[in-house]
Length: 281
Image (tube, rainbow, N blue to C red; front, side, top):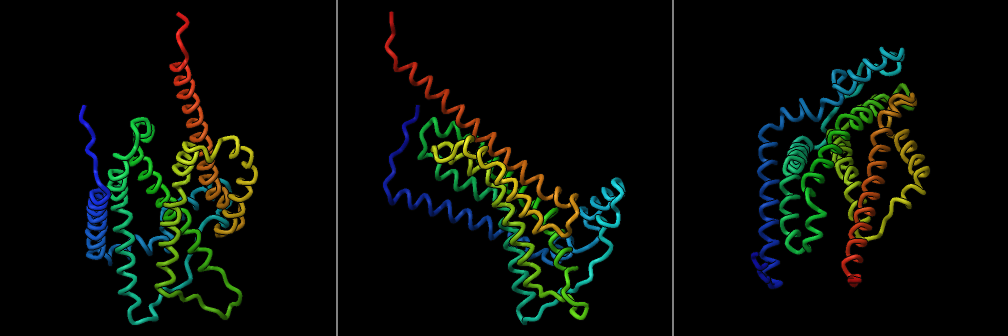
């Protein structure tokens, strides 16, 4: 067995510095690639949720035909224009979009670098219980990004572009507002989907229990429904369910994860207690 090398505080700082340098370099490289293809990214990714041929709108329309709610679920057209009212508007949004694309693309590697720095400081039992952390965190983040892009973004854009307080007002959105809205929802959902990971570690350190989450399940359901009603483009139950159901499933998965962690801790404590008991022989 290899003995772990003792490192001084300065050695740790040096090690952290190189992990940070590699992480930043990965983001910069991916961002540069994004900037090279920024025109394609705007046409086929950022502006895609504002077109009626976006996959989400096609799926909703097909669903509307099946359930007899075609008029409510089929998006016919978008009536708005995106403008740039600042001299640096388009350039700055190109930089912003490239950086976000770079951050999303490099996220698994960045988290692997963070985990590589943290992992040596864990006990063997902690390393074993946290096995697969990089895959789990990366998967949940990308799943949240997909949810934000394919569900929240098109619905929010449709709702905000069709909402009017007077027929005399024409919707003409600034490029900064449009990009900021899409980016905040996509990255926000990526972070929101880390909820099961947070529940896992909070349960491991004893700050959260499945009993507590089950106790407030009804409150959580109400909060999910209210939040989904706010962000959905219409009041029909189908679109409301389309947003609320994944969030509720995420909550139930978190309860299951918390229960599994508690059960594993109880097994380990029972095994440890059994080892500590003196033999009767």
